[in-house]
Each structure stands twice: as C-alpha cells, then as structure tokens.
Image (cartoon, rainbow, N blue to C red; front, side, top):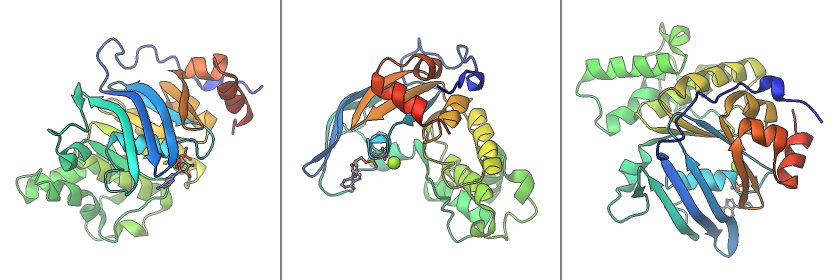
Length: 271
Ligand SMILES: Nc1ncnc2c1ncn2[C@@H]1O[C@H](COP(=O)(O)OP(=O)(O)O)[C@@H](O)[C@H]1O
Ligand SMILES: [Mg+2]
C-alpha cells in the first residue's frame, strides 16, 4: 500500500464545521430517463473548505456536481429527487431565481475553454451581463482583481486587453477560466477535473491557487489523482455506482477508509 500520509496536511484548523453548512444535500437521486445515476446521496458542504469527489469513472461525480448549481435544469429527461438547501433555502424552491442561483457558483471544466476574445473580455463578460460594476473604471479594476486572485495578473498585465485568451498556454488558460469564474463573485467554485488536461507545473500552480481561494470560497473539486486530493482536500467524498459511499476527512479516507470499495480505490489508484 502506498503511503500518502506525507501529503496530508493537518487541516483541523480549516473551515468551521460547527457552523451550519453552506449547502446540504439530502437523499438526492437523479435519473437520466430510465437510468438512475445518483442514489440517495447525502453530504454537506461547509464554508471555506475544499471537498474532493473521487471514485471510478461513471459513478456520478459530475452528475452530483451539476445538481448544486442546477445545471441539469435544461437537460431533457432528467428527474431529480431529494432536497438541496443553500444557507437553509431549498435551491429548487419556487422562490428561487435559477440564473441568480447559478451566479453563486463558478464552474471550471477539465479542458480550458476561454472565449475567443481578449483576456480582459473573458473576465469582464460575466460581470457585465449581470451589471455588477457601475462603470468602466470599476469594471477594469474588477477584472484586474480577478486576474490577480487567479494568480495570472503578473503574466498578462502587459497584454490583457489585446491578447486573445486562447493564445495563452494551457495552464494560463485554466487560470483565466478561474478568473472568469470569479468575475460573478461566486460563493462556491465547482471544478470538474480542473488539472486533468494540464502539465505538472501548471497543475502545481492551479493547486496553489485553489488553496488560496479557499480563504473566500468553498470548492468542490473532482479529481482522478489521489495525490492531488491528498494535497488539496479538507474532506473527501467517495462515489461508487451512483452512491456516495463514504465522506470524511482526507486523513480518514486515505488512511482508514470504512468501506472496502473506498479502501481499494484509494490504494489502487495512487498516481
Ligand atoms: N446526459 C446524460 N444522459 C444519460 N446518461 C448520462 C448523462 N450524463 C451522464 N450519464 C450517465 O450517468 C452516469 C454518471 O455519469 P457522470 O456523473 O458523468 O460520472 P463521473 O463524473 O463520476 O465519471 C454514467 O453512467 C453516465 O454514462
Ligand atoms: Mg465526470
């Protein structure tokens, strides 16, 4: 068995698990037509924590992530059961405005996907369509702040209004996508294998960035790298065939998992 304990930082001081959760997921099931993709999933997401979703391919990790920001709303044939509350409010309740709800979440995908527009426009877009900034000067400052928070500013400040986002390196593009996600001032970042298509140095930069962002956000990250989960996550949720089999501190899941499935996965897939 590979030992990941040297990766695992003591994070007892992180987050506040005595406070009520930011998001609570209760008895969540999801069907794509006849096919059930999630089975009675339960978990909490706390403020200022990084929660990693791990598990074999096709076990429902992305599906669960998309429930949080109601990304399934426009997918035909999807049926959802159970309850998700955010700050105590039912996110599928009739009093919720879905676009306003989605704005509380930033999404970062596996493949960097900047718009074919300038670096500046990539970030300004979200703030502009939501009318978040009163004037051009405020918008410029906001874009600069987002680029700084995404650890990208120093690399692009000379060209941020002229160079296309798509002309950056893969790792820079991914940090640009983080900056773009931050532009709408979300509470939660949802990241679906964000380091899955970038090189190790770019990955290290993105991980450092994520640890920084935890100070102001909750992050749910899907990863296939056990060492990445060990480096980043405060808690780990193990998914298996649509069920969330186990959720616990990173230390517990990696050193003392309760279920045989999680234990074998963690031991067999160290990479
Ligand atoms: N839009 C969809 N329509 C039908 N089935 C889907 C759809 N998206 C995912 N699935 C199925 O749901 C299951 C869970 O998928 P997914 O959440 O993407 O898993 P993971 O992210 O853990 O790899 C898989 O069996 C997948 O084939
Ligand atoms: Mg997935």
